Image (cartoon, rainbow, N blue to C red):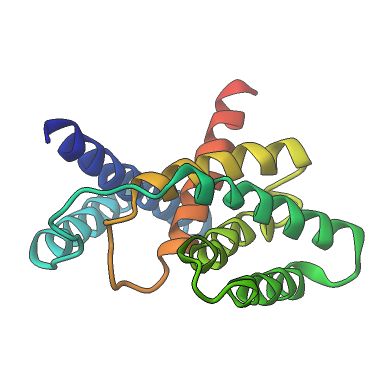
Length: 187
């Protein structure tokens, strides 16, 4: 039970930190402000996010994780979308739409299969990773690593942020952000 709470806490903190880092970079690069105002805005936004988390019921009470056989489709969706985006003139949005639409038909192969009914959301989570700009995701290696991280976050966050829109996009954002920060630290 303690491990489950630790994992849940880590996932919420990871999302919070990625949002704060992203907002901090936006504030610092887009607005000519001094450090005091930037820090003040970041602290204010962080407090609002923490207060929202405290007062909204964003989670189920039980602890469960997505199956690994479903999670493996997250990086597959990322790679397919990325390759379609890079090797055609469709662009990222149309590539994401094509892969997502095709994924939505998978449950029709066997309407009674619980496994097949879970694949569209896993693939679509990967699609959000794969539709990242080429400037952000410069190589297939980057997309595969970000897809794997998105799969891990998808696996661990099954009961987090339930009922809120944007969960799959947030998972993709966190995974691409983690890989980008990791690359930035290595350079």
